[in-house]
Length: 192
Image (cartoon, rainbow, N blue to C red; front, side, top):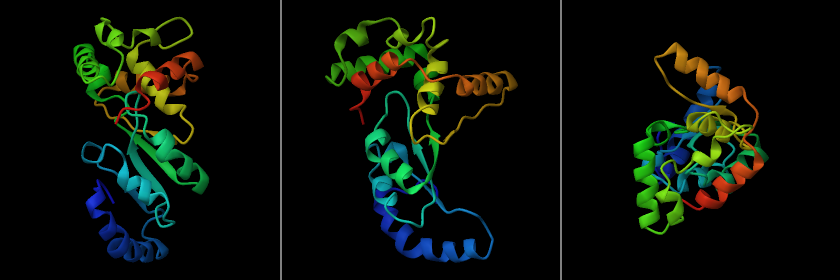
């Protein structure tokens, strides 16, 4: 079930899950999954409920360097129950457009949600790009998500073969250095 808002979760569980499971048992599909609607559910309220129900075998959720909520609220339970995860919004515009990233970080700093010195930097996430670290911010974003415990599949979309190859290359690289992921967690781990 795709894009289930918190307000619709009870209906999805009580009215839709059982008939869908009957179809699964007939061999119509293999696994029943549920996805959040990240823009309308920034705290992942729906998934925090869904991960406790045995009917959902796969979950698609938003997770990226500035949205780490799932580390505490979703991944521990998906790991415990063996629920597969598909990560969306791993890159999106915020990491592919340097001006948009600077503006977004500045707005967060204005609200007191991130340190002001990060917002004043020309490249707020530039500390990730260094020998032994990320090649660039997109590489960092893919590697950050890919190596998070609980991350099963990192989704991305492109119409470009070159982008596809580049994205796959990033996903196949080792994890970012621990100092970098620790800094990302310290700076952005509490954002919603």
